[in-house]
Image 1 (tube, rainbow, N blue to C red):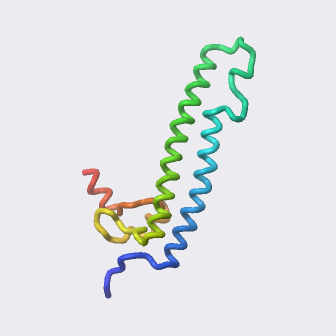
Image 2 (cartoon, one colour):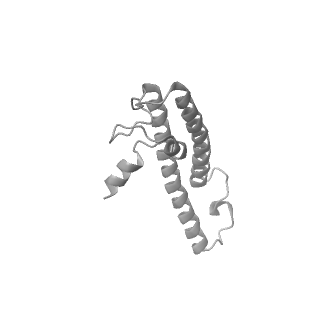
Image 3 (cartoon, helix red, strand yellow):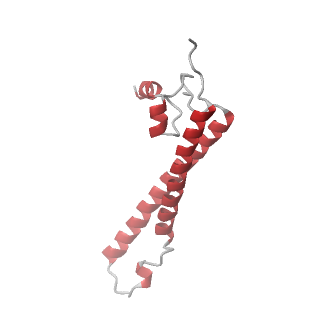
Length: 126
C-alpha cells in the first residue's frame, strides 16, 4: 500500500469549511478590536467632562494599545487562514513544508493553517 501524499477533494472541502468558519469569526473579532482602537463606539474620555483623572486616561490608553496588539495578532491569523485557502486551491494544503508528509487531520482540525507537522515543529524547537 502506497503512502498517501495529499488529501482527497472531500477532505479538502471539510478543511475549507473549517477555515471559512474560523475566518468569519476572526474577521468579526478583528473588527471589534479595531473599533476599540478607533473609538468607533464613541465611548472615550473625550466624550466626558474634563475632570477625568489622569490615571483613568492612562488606563484608556493602555486599553487601546492592548486592543491594537490584539488587532494586529488577529490580522496575522486572518492572513494565515487565507494562505491556507490558497494552499487548498493549489493542492499543497496539509503537506508539511519540512518533511513533505501529510499533517495529521487532527492537527489540521485544531490548527487549520498549520504548515508543519508536530514532529517538524518539535525538531525546530531543539
